[in-house]
Structures are given as structure tokens and as C-alpha cells.
Image (cartoon, rainbow, N blue to C red; front, side):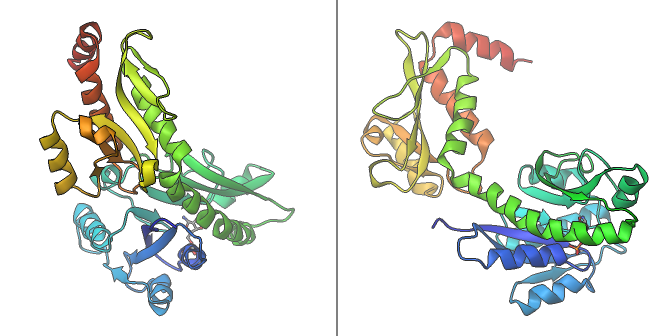
Length: 321
Ligand code: GRF
């Protein structure tokens, strides 16, 4: 099985979701592992649970520290532990925009309501008060706006007669403990899923002017120009010729450039069989820190090398805005 994605969990208190995530990670085929549990309260109960299970911990009280400095220290602890994802589990802090921005698409949170309903606090009381048939829980990506990022998974929990916020919270927590590990596992596994990666590449490639898709030797490829005379600027390779990589092949300027990339950044680039000889480099996609802006830049560069002037002019004009 591919290397497991490394996850840092941030907590503020009991850490029951952290424990659910941690124990789920100990099941053999779980695609993530917990590399750190960090808290803004050194007394957080969850820290002791993690430590007892041999998971590294980090604690730094936020009291008397500027928000940005506290965020920076927590982020550094996560990076030092090798985290590729940050998972918030009852982390009662508002995060600075810079911190959230640097982890876009790699920071998840769990919120005890069926979002977009009831962002913020007192979610259970508000659901009961409104006469809702169900409360529930959502796992979502963290963005700058509170509880507003893309929802990755939800579970509804029936509200019974005579329910109080406490009784509902208790049952919702069971749902949380099922949902969070499952959604996180599915989310990190996407990085190694060829269908997901292909679709992402396809969206980027076809967004370039005058581009179309055409299969080449059984692989999806994209050409710039007309259907008749277009030229290939990218290929998608799923573990070709014994390679373990799922990769995008794009055109470098020269063999020297290709070899230099492969030598200096072997985690990102490789020289593909056959295509390498004519200057195509493999950009590895199935790795947790794949930078999609970088992929988009390579696609555009490769496209520019073969696209008709009319198309590149259009692109230049768009770039000026
Ligand atoms: C959970 O109810 C979660 O939905 C919310 O904070 C609570 C954390 O509880 N974000 P625990 O510390 O995981 O037990």
C-alpha cells in the first residue's frame, strides 16, 4: 500500500474525536496516520490519551500570545512533525487568514450541525428550538469564513421528543466518531485515485484555449490547435511501463533541463520511458503534497510551446487582467 498521509490533529479539550481518528488510523488499511496531536491548552485531556498511545504531542497555551504568533507556533509544530494535513477536532480557536490560506484543501474541521445550518455555537439548542426533525454533524474543508468551506460529508441524527441540547450532543458525538475517520480516509485517499487525478488534470488541460483530448497509445492526452492539425502538450500516465507513479507528462525545453529537474527534485519529477528521450518530463501527481497550481503552470507552459499563435495571444490578453 502507498505511504500513509501524515495528519496533525488540533484539539482544545476532551479529544474524543481525536481518539476516534487515532484508533481508526490503527486499522491496517487506513490511508492516514496521526503524526502529532497539538493543543492550545496544556491541560487538554486528549493530549494524555495521545501520549499514552505513543503519539507525539505539542501544547502551547494561547494566553498572552498574539493570535498570529500562536498560529505560527502551532503550524511549525505540525510541519516539524511532517504533517500533510491538519485536522481540527474541537479546536476552539479562530485561525488567522494566512494560516488557513497556506493549508487550503489540507485542513478539515468537524462541526456539530447539518451545515449550512447553524454555523457557530449552540448548534443543538438552535436545532431543537427551530423544531428541526434532525440535528447532525458535518465535516468540511476550512476556509477563511467560519464553518463555510466545502462540505465533505454529513450525517443526520434524529431529534427525539423531549430532547435536550445535552442528550442530542451526546448522540451526535457517536455520529461524529463514525463520520470523521471515514471522511478523512476517503479525502486523503483521493490523492492516489487515478480517476480523481485524471479528472483534475483534464479540467485544467481543457480550460486552456483551443485544447482537446485525444487518446494516445491508450493514455489520455491533450492537444492544442484544431482537431486536424493539433499537437500534443500533455499526457496522463497511470503507472506506465513499471513506474509506480501516476503522472502528467509535459514538455521541457531541453534534455539538460529535464535531467536537472529529475536530479534535484526526485520526489516531484522523473524521466518517463520512451517519452523522456524527446524531452517529456513526468510530473508526479500521486503524492500528498502535489501542488496543483504548479501542475497548472506546467500545463500552460507545455501548451504554449505548441499552441497556435492565435490561442497564445488570447491567453496573453487574459493574463493582462
Ligand atoms: C465536537 O462536538 C465537535 O463537533 C466540535 O467540538 C466538539 C469536540 O469534542 N467541533 P471532542 O473534544 O472531540 O470530544
